[in-house]
Amino acid sequence: MTFTLPNLPYAYDALQPYMSKETLEYHHDKHHQAYVTNGNNLLKGTEFEGKSLEDIVKGSFGKNAALFNNAGQHYNHLHFWKWMKPNGGGEKLPGKLEAKIKSDLGGYAKFKDDFIAAGVGQFGSGWCWLAVKGGKLEIMKSANGESPLVHGATPILGCDVWEHSYYIDYRNRRPDYLKAFVENLVNWEYVDELFSKA
Ligand code: MN3
Image (cartoon, rainbow, N blue to C red; front, top):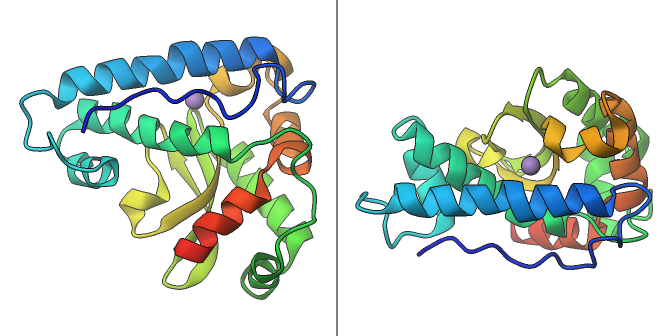
């Protein structure tokens, strides 16, 4: 397969005031596009040509760093756009997911604190995650383009904490960006869809 940049599933200004049109224009049109373009160039002539994106991400991890970084970030961003929606976030979660968060992570309030803490605690560029590992939910964090996918888990929610994701809107206030993401942007229906397949 070759990588292609999908359109955003909402208008560029749809996530304001929590994520601006300018941020989405740069983040989607420039940063994600660069991972797609570079990933396609790096894929050419490798053993990974013709494989699925998930297989490319898992197969190139630890073997082909340049390809992994771009394929990993393509995978992460494909989901990231869908992990947000206008009027999202908050604690109204689909029932089964809410129950699982309660049993595995101590409830929504603790999930929120721990997810934000993981994003704040990721030194430098990376992501914080809600993932399914061995049938249980876990909060994780990872550097650069890594995701739970290369650590034996299935990501069902992730927040991009690279500076390009928040610096236009929040400057250095990463905790405020993470709080806005959880409280106002998360598309819980999409998280639930991935949870039900994990
Ligand atoms: Mn990004």
